[in-house]
Length: 255
Image 1 (spheres, rainbow, N blue to C red):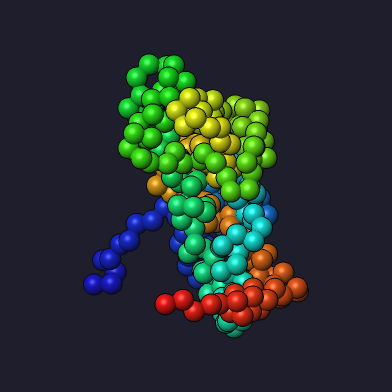
Image 2: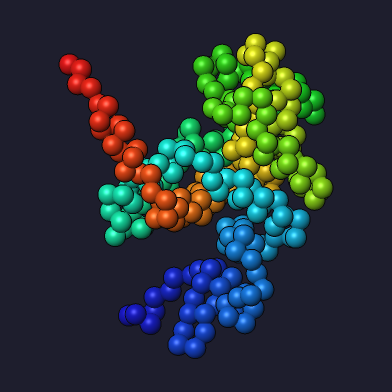
């Protein structure tokens, strides 16, 4: 019966003498020849990216890797303080915090842009953007990718990613619409908000043709590296216990 079972995969298989990945010999064709970012793209997209696509994709990963003492970093450090024998637990704790306020914006923005483009009429991108922002406000929904808790004027990552996409000829409809939203939203919201880095990452990844349903995964992939760095620094220069004691010693009971 076991000989009749088949579980098709286009990813990895192995036997006693070799490992195959993406139809390539892992040891002979990939190791030392393919970078990790290129491989991650290839695994999800099912196609090998061009050099320009790799450059933009890896710029996105760098942009999302770490942003200081965010809740995800603090969660990882505190978990490591509590369970230093569980590195995987500390990493997981940080990754589990990737949601609508941190990291998840990458997917939320890509999905929002893709949805708007799918139903858009005409080619006036500013008009399309204006209608999208107006509709979102009427429905009392946030426009993903607008605003940042720290970068109130401009997120320094945004213009760099747009420039790289332009240089590599990958500046597509999602980035174009995202920039248009940046131009027109003050007409609707009566205030100017920056286009944040997580949002532009979502737009760039969507322009790379990656599935919008998978974009949060790339944000988590990037942040895993940042969290590992946070934990490594916690070992060298611990602060998690100070965070814990600051909160604990200043807790006040209120009925």
